[in-house]
Length: 506
Image 1 (cartoon, rainbow, N blue to C red):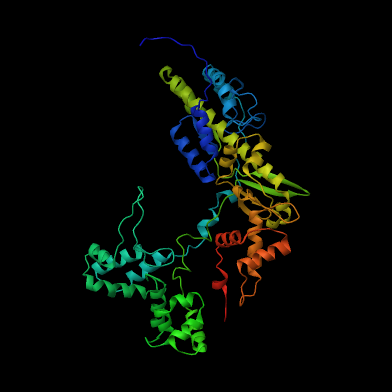
Image 2 (image 1 turned 180 degrees about the horizontal axis):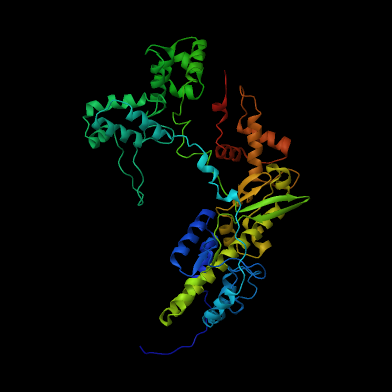
């Protein structure tokens, strides 16, 4: 063994902190970006927002957030900051130039700039409309309100709160174990376990549970569909020997499949009586939580990142920067700190970080606009005519057009939304696999889903179409060649039941 020296020339891609920050900002959603900007304002003293008054846009010339000429990168507006190869080529020169900037002179020059007017209209001072909306109560709140109005002991109330806290989104009592991070599952719970935790005697637990199940909505906290329907039947005065109760208790599986002949044969009653009982059962609620939601869907809104506006025959893409604070240099505080020689290095580092952040946010905006414009150009028939004219498109198509990597396009289109004349869509919505047509050009998979949905909506409800019949209808009317299993997959994705469960006899 011996020690030797070797000279070797290699190329290596280095992810600088600035490049990592730019990539991270690119994949953030709008709300996450707003939160990130607020954090940076708290952590970096040289940063300021538009409302602080320390730095505002100039009346003319360059915007205030553009770095001085000494620290600008060439082709900043043409080449994305997320291009790793270009970033590594310019990194050394940029960092050297940044370190050599005379920050005192930079701040002095910006002080001479005239601030723009900051007049505000009266409408901007009004509270947002969301504050004036009434919020419907969730099922959890609705049940707790009834619990407070009921006559329960402290122990019974604690047990009832545990029951209410274990309801799923359908309103059923879910005591199944949950999956741990390591893949194992916690053991399933029982009513006795909840009673023991609340300090309630096990013999009293079923009575308290029954009282909760008779809260509004009737049937809440049931453990399965059979119990839910039985609770409602008994609340309506049905007896144990009534056909409705017998069918729910012993023939629920046949009822779900509309197999009324089997029910009549096993119960030895006329099929007309089964029909009458089934009609009554259809009036029951199978999902007690149907009219309740943990989220207020009426006041939840998605703020689009870009708008697509039709201007004559042209489609224009506009960015939406409302709500996102613009960042500027806090000159007043920076000048004061620069007077301390020991703080110059600290302030210089913070100024460099501020410039990188401002540049990364601006480049993020431009990248989203470029990708959105490419999508509009390739999917123009969709914006003019609707979903039926959506074209097949993959990430590679856009990546090649805008000169970026597919991973960059994936980050740009994640959690970013576009407001269009056809509605509000996530950017990822426009990327679809292709389905081969018999004669014409290929069609997007999303268009096929909508075609299937339209066929099912217009079918005879008394005689629903099978998946194979839908395949034949698509081939005959739309020229779409598709397998039966693909129709089944798309139907399930749309939340549409099979033909046997869609059949309506009444």
